[in-house]
View (tube, rainbow, N blue to C red):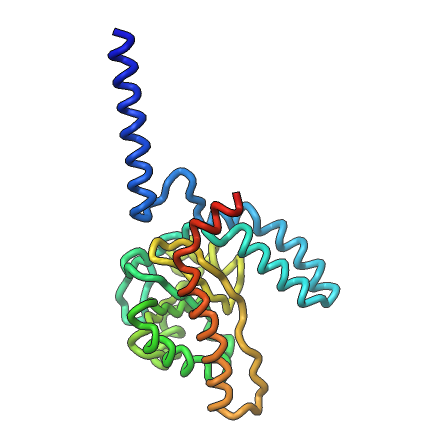
Amino acid sequence: MRLILLFFILVSLSFAANAQQDSSLQGEPTDQTVSFSDAIKTHLRKYNIQSDIEYEKGDIAAGQALFDSLVQNYLVGSRFNDFQLKRVDSKKIRLSKFNKPVFIVTYASWCIVNKGEIAALNKLSRKYSKDVQFVVLFWDKKSEAKKIGCKFNGAIDVCYANESYRHDAKIVATLKHTLGFPTQYFLNTNLDVVDIKRGGVQVAPRTPYREAMALNYDLFNERLSEFLLKKDLVKEHLANSD
């Protein structure tokens, strides 16, 4: 009787292990997967304390180094929350439905977007449309996001979220009130965080439009190229950090 019971226990454990392996291969969260919101909640406060000290001293480079450390040590490899986004055309989309890597840029309509930046993103979205889903997310009400959203082409999903909307509290708390904006999130097909960047190229006010557009294009193109090279290396990153 004991042998029969032991046999059934071993079979059950085998099935459980196989099921966990299958879910991992299919990109489904496992017990070992840390959500992005949990990673932020756990590590952001310590980062903010340290970075505030550096920025108060005027050491911008040290502040940026701390941000890069936060991203690479604690946020890369976390599973981005599967947010349902509201587009300015009144449609809704869930991130997991894209079924390809996602590049998210966050803005606010009251902050002036860099000269030439929208044109650069439009050009890049056409170049990478088969490989990457472009999403622009405005921290604003629909009416305001819609005014500037018309400047982006059809290859970019222009979305919005605002504190005043009842269902936006989670995404606003997770993204806007943590890493700020403008911020770029690079996610692989499974919504694992591959990289996060803040800010963009510094364009002088009198820079000619074509030159400004080229500067923005080169920066985003470099980041996207690195992203596509690293998008399948998240598991390796996690294994090396253990």
